[in-house]
Image (tube, rainbow, N blue to C red; front, side, top):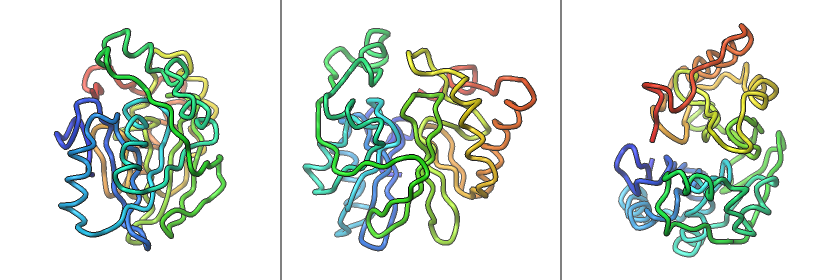
Length: 242
């Protein structure tokens, strides 16, 4: 982890930013909001001196995950990979469809924080594996937190890792928020796609992560949906993550 608001690694508006050692160097998963670039670059230099960053993969277009992509690309010389469904939002800098406008009006972001349009170098689609940095990544589209949310699975040191963005968090907490494209119906239809993956490492965009038994958190949320009850949601009691 090279960036995070909760762990005090970068900006107060950053998600957890992960750096993965891959055959050709490093790949970042998510990039923060663009306000913690100095800290993220410094952490990379300290943890991986001299190792090039080949790319950054975005899980979705929300500001805390995607706002820093272009700035880091300019500083690190990496390419940006994003969901096909997110591409137009990012390339237009669409603050309404990205959710930034509504979140800023509610006080979630400072009024001066704006979304800058930038080009996406590589797009990916649901369940179509792609290569970045010499590493194979499998994207799984799970609506519910947002219409363009993806989880990314890959192998790290022989273990199956799932970078879950804001789809599912440790303990089976889900990411429904008060936004135009967030709701339980997406989860009901899509969350079962994460079942039976045998996930070891669950690495979400906020909060606790685990390096063993990550599938238990995913399966807990799936089971709650099947039993007719709503799983815990971010923003409820101990599940608050910002």
